[in-house]
Image (tube, rainbow, N blue to C red; front, side):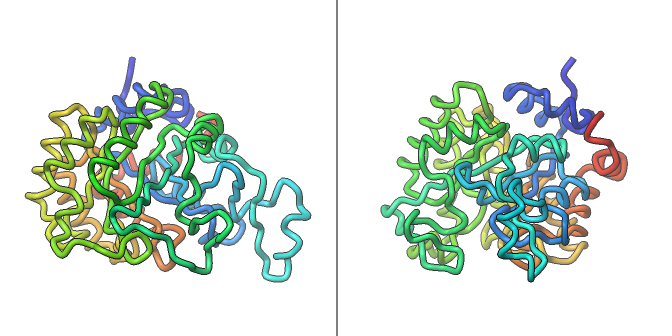
Length: 331
């Protein structure tokens, strides 16, 4: 019999098919926490991957931000070929080269999510040269999955959820999401939407009224693509995204049969405990099925552990938070 995700052990979660995982999230009544765990950047704790940190502090689902299925890295693990770590020995860094998502999934006992990025010129979208840029691949660290070959490879490597991220003209965005749903054919959950503002990396023409990033019409169109989960910026995370506005979007999305994921980003994943608890409860009140915590704690790699744990405590309580923290991945 299908249970809520909160009631599932690690092995039970990993055994869920895509449709079962979606239903388990729905049955959790707003008590599911997803955390971004950047893999192309420093690990928060020495000799520990960011994914392990997120799992240890109560996250139900791990979003491997910047995961590149062609060049996987998990800093905090010894590389499969130890020689790959030699250039970094003097600074005591292990880059974890050669590990795949499927192995990390088994290591942490959590369903995994990865992102494809939508970055069309029509919105003013562009990439800029940063310290993480790869001019040959024409992407920054946050844009590692950009082709349908990457999409298939990510599924083959064991991801449970593929997220359509980015910012673009609604028609194009919906068309691409619909194509993802078609190609996935029920093998993975498809997650699409606008999790937070574009910032300077992704857009040069950010609307003056930031609500225009995700209007009620756009939310309905996204949900009508057949995507399983739709992103909405969390109330309190962007100007104009009030509890009432998020509730309006959530009602539209739920009516179309999709789940609502609210994104807490914009560096608020590095805020104080009391503020993050208020944001978490406000958004559960607004109808969120899931709460996603971004990766900008004190740098752009992972949320602060106490902030993550506070979100879990706020929406799940000690019973389910402690259970998720303590249960062996072998159970």
